[in-house]
Length: 159
View (tube, rainbow, N blue to C red):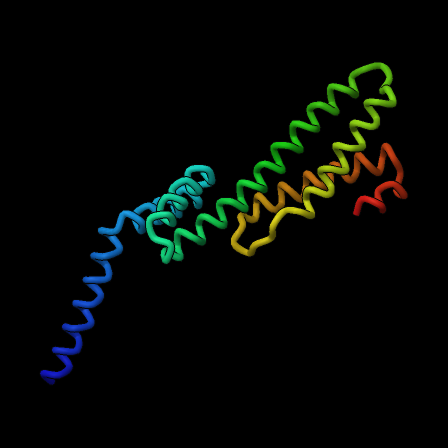
């Protein structure tokens, strides 16, 4: 009976020391904060805190994971932002009475950049589903635009 009490005491002491380490380490505090920012969708702040935590302790796996996932999420956000800005430019071009050949070439280049850009995005099971869906929707918009303006044959070369 006494050995069980001693064993439980040792285990509880180890857990307490481990908890004390995690709560007193600024690297782990930053990584916990980064994780919260990541789940709130503030990927820039999450990236900055995770980077700081990882620079303090390269063995901090949580910081490394949040850093990597925040970087991926920022790439998805940049893709979506770029797509929206291209769509604004294309909408401005389409308000003219006629679209010049130079504008058609610009539209073709923008749509091909967005179609190919989607394939270059890194894939991760931890990436927010909403970001992946928004990026997929953006790609489909540009595929439909490309198909409508330049035909199906032109799109097959861009796959």
